[in-house]
Length: 112
Length: 114
Image (cartoon, rainbow over all chains, first blue to last red; front, side, top):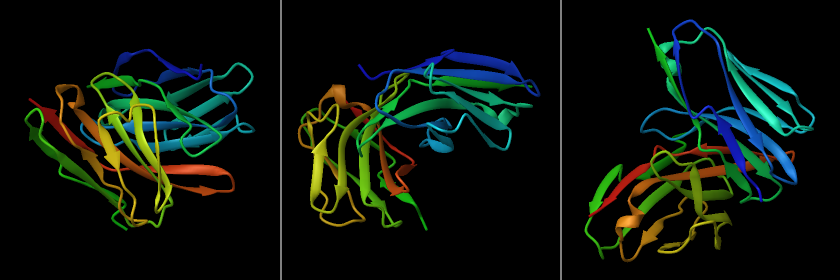
């Protein structure tokens, strides 16, 4: 069964600290993996997208890694800011237009 | 570009009422999607469309209908609203480039069925 699991479910960190969010998946055949940021009450916004051949991609203070062998991805946030408080969703795509599998997200809260 | 726009932002329905959630994109994307997101849960695909005139069911289509008469618009219809349809609804559109899909989401419509 195609599944995407994220951990932790929620996380609270101090402003300025780093954190890492995890995503494990069993989606096959794998096409790509994306990380989205979803602010409360808003639609998700894409942060990174990685294909099978990519094992790291950065977008400012966000760095995503992908290990296609172990089917794991992580999102590392450096020097967190209050505006990083949001849900972070891992989405894995199998080939085909409707084959997107969503994790339930990690709720990150950055406190001053 | 305005991107993906959704209306209304918020709506309260009584059980048995009907309504249409509007979604429009101005990026000339072929693919469009409707998702629902329940509190603390991941997004679930309701319906999707790969182009004008073509629609197909997603994971949770029961109680909903869609149409795609133009590339820009992808309305979602609820015929007999039920409390189980209380959720936040997101519309998205996407395009394929070199085999990779990039998806853009609208701001969401919050629906409460009482």
